[in-house]
Length: 137
View 1: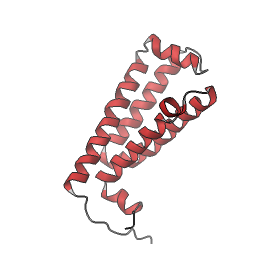
View 2: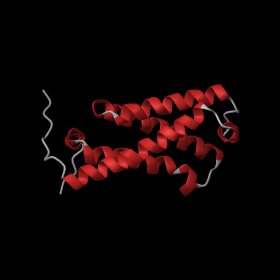
View 3: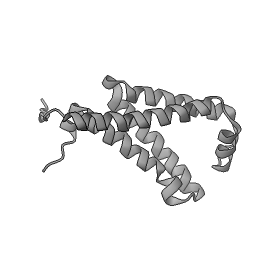
């Protein structure tokens, strides 16, 4: 039987910081998913520049995936699963930017920045995750 070390509950400011970080990620990704559902011409043009063609079906599929993963992340019992799925999604976006030679700090690493916000926000607001990933002092 595996025993996970118990951690003290997060302080109120830490919990609120985590909620704010997570909220920013959720709002951004829900908007990102929604514009892929429409899909606006800028979405299909960008997908074409990235080498995926200007398929509206692909854009809608990516929009659905983004929204489903974000909803999983936003619901406390499934938030860790959502964070794992979003990490994979953002990693794929980063790989696509590397493949086409996008600017490093503004485009390629944007997925890393967002991923750090996903996990940082979740770590600050979720005691169970802090028990799994403790930082020692």
